[in-house]
Image (cartoon, rainbow, N blue to C red):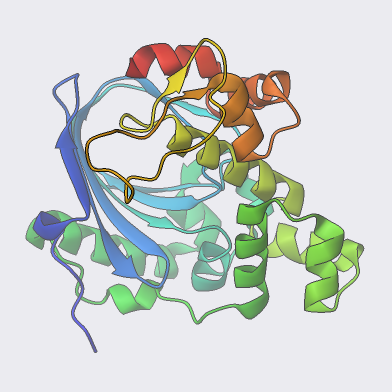
Length: 266
């Protein structure tokens, strides 16, 4: 068995503008270990994921997020494991729909015995930077859930996904609620929002003025950066009906408008 990674070799790490530090690294099987120190109050965009979180001696579960989540200031260190959409319920054996957009003590959701196993893994992450025994939190690949995640990333409709799997749309909805904690439409909305945010990242950028008419490939020239996208173009490329549609979704899922996100990254 391949040993779990050490957080010091995490895929993403950095010092935030508020002075806090965030580090994360893959544990495989759709799980990401993360560490946060001295966080300030903020708003976390929806990601459809489920987290198990160790803060002090307390272990909590953050249910599947389908709306943005305001957080409180947190002095000290917090450790967590984030499960990709549709994975945690199979690993921890609970009904994710009951804790959608909520946080609760883990023992109240999965029972004392299972919560103690998760706490042991999280304490190992905190003490040693690695997670011996993290295979306890691994899940076998769920074929249909993978189909749903991939389809949502392309914006495919529920009827198309159900047909590909061989189910009715009603059965797909029941299985989505039991496995993801929300319906397929919510998964599409989250994927579309994350796609729009990726188009707004520094280096890709966007304009408040007229839309650009074509993309330039970085492979074609190393001297010219990628063209900037107007917000209307971001909405179109991400799969929204129009910019107003994107703005409505951003208010719910990000807690800010696209223009406010643009201003924070300028």
